[in-house]
Image (cartoon, rainbow, N blue to C red; front, side, top):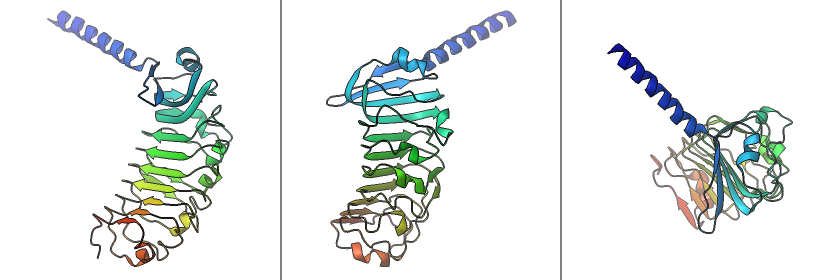
Length: 265
């Protein structure tokens, strides 16, 4: 009986290792859908895997997704017209260096950059200032985000910033103050406790959407509703706000949503 159990245990362990090895093996898949070219690579642990598994050239615009990877650095995306770059559970060691260039080869094509599932972030956002066409920056399921003043160093093309289902460790009072092209800001289902008007441009000439749903806001600054000449949509639902005095300048905008604001009068 002991021998049979031992043999069975060894066989089960070997089978488990094979399954794990198969699941972790680096590979790429064409995940395109109608009208949207998409390419997903999984399990990369070396920059050499890009040369071995990524088809080239990939004619764009392409959504390039990296999932479950642990890399020393990201190689230059040569011969790939990356329009959207998404990193999902991706660790990049070189991101920790202040003088690193996190993403190369996409300076003239990249319009949307997504970090999700606790992926590594650049040590300084000024290192991404070379992304001259970047329009959308999105964070989803991230932990201890540092929303610092160096976001202002991103290219003037930036129009949309989204922080979703993430925890925020720090947010500077001038976080996006000089991103004058900002059109939409979403901080949804996070732990945001305080919002200062100084975080955004003043005036914010292009901001038409402000979504702060599902946070821990209990109050708004007195000047919260000032200097949003283009604002059309404001959503403060599912917070714990108890006063609307600072919203007075915004009550005539196209849509204002306060549903689920506890104790609001």
